[in-house]
Amino acid sequence: MNILVCVKQVPDTTEIRIDPVKKTLIRDGVPSILNTFDAFALEQALQLKDKNPANVKIVVASMGPKQAETMLRDCLAVGANSAYLITDRKFGGSDTYATSYILSKAMKKIEEEEGSFDMIFCGKQAIDGDTAQVGPELAEHLGLHQITYAINITLNEDNTTALITREVDEGKIVVEARIPVLVTFTKTDDLRFASIMNKMKSKKAEIKEINYEDLEGIDDTKIGLKGSPTRVVKSFTPDVKTDGIIIREDDPNEAFEKFAEELEKAKLY
Amino acid sequence: MFENKNFWVYIETKEDGSAKNGGLELLGQAREMVDQVDEEVIALIIGNNVDKAVEQVKKYGATSAIAVTGDVYSEYNTDVYANAVVENVKEYQPNVILISATSLGRDLGPRVAGRLATGLTADCTSLGFEVDKKEVQWTRPAFGGNLMATIICADHRPQMGTVRPGVFERKEYEISPNFEVITKDIDFPQEKILSRIVEVIVDEDADNVDLEGAEIIVSGGRGLGKPENFKLIEELAEVLGGTVGSSRAAVDAGWISHAHQVGQTGKTVGPKLYIACGISGQIQHLAGMSGSDVIIAINKDENAPIFTVADYGIVGDLFTVVPKLTERIKKKKNL
Image (tube, each protein chain N blue to C red):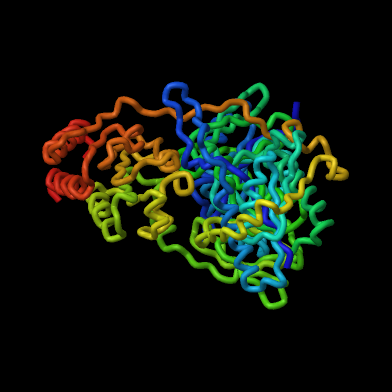
């Protein structure tokens, strides 16, 4: 069982603040992390490996700048077997369509080295873009079927099908899916930590790099900013209200009375 | 200039064959844009039982409908449904496809966009329209709601987007005199269906909790401390005739089901009154409720970001304030 896990390095969006005057994102000091949902996808792959260490191989791949190596090393430290960084200036500015196209080409390249993949795992979405489109679009480029919003996966005995639990608006759905398949994961179990030993080892591990030149037959009209069907024309921060009536009193009774008075004045109940 | 014309709205149906609200909301929004260029709003309905939905789309702004029916559509399967959408797009060449950003819509949308090699904008919260180019301006939150981005798809057709349910209101229109339903029978070979549903575990709350349609919502968050304390929220909601909501923190802690969650990964709501109790107001939560007409915040931390969007707020202990408020309202309403 050969599993590819697609991962992305993202700014920790829970740490991002807005500059109230300039109305811009304050990105300074915001840590870069492994996208939360990708971490869950990796964890699910690792659990399959726990059950059958000799027969499960996990390869992680990320498209991004050189700095993403750090995150790939973290993936190796928790148990991935090998890691690939797909990086090139030509890939910059890609939207989900172009990104998934590049990933599909890179995956074919990785397969030359690692053998063909039985399953591809992705996070359901990245916490910076929140599109949830790269997984399904990658599946489309590869001609694989997709199972999205998974929270759990188990394999049948001969590894030809998987039972996957999906979490959707209506509740949970269990599907039986033929392998090969691309699965995107939402929040699943708790994540594991790397041992100090493995962390040290991962620091020296090789991160294989894939560049534009490595991707034979790649269509230039489908990559980067120019190859992206969508384009951002404007970005802005959402408005904040400044004229709210906020009651702050030391005495809780007094505070409540004032509060209730305001609500009644506004005829809110 | 593209030849493509008309706005399509993908209509997702429920178990009983009726349309989900998200799609109906988009019909009205599409109608507003389409009326400026004198084109049509076409509802695309796929399922093995679509009659109810057809009646509904007629009422809510569709000028015609395409219905794809057959046994193969009795359960949702990405490949089967994507194929049906793509076949129709190839035949009729629409200019725009709007899809409600439900879990199904966000599974189907990218698959279709990928196959058509066109642009798709995810989870939009507002739409603009440039009449000359017949180009949609898709606005959506990114960075967990910290930033809004407006996106266009200039050189590819159809232009596609998923739109968050609840951001537009359903609107009734006079039934179009030329309304017609084109019924399509598009088959999909059984052997190419690679996954099957083996079990459905319905979240009872998912059907019963209607946050998007609620006029009053009372929400509880981490400040409640434990699941039993949601009783305070329920009591306040009850005297107001409101619906119970929650922050993600309370859902993640397992205190209340996901169906109640308001915010980036939950529901987007727009009630007349939203009361946030013990919710700090992370940007992800604000993204889902800041469109409420009036917001009341109850929180003991005076620096909680929830106060930055609140019209009325009290810095105080919710365990004192909420029961008192419930009592006060009861008295006022003679309950």
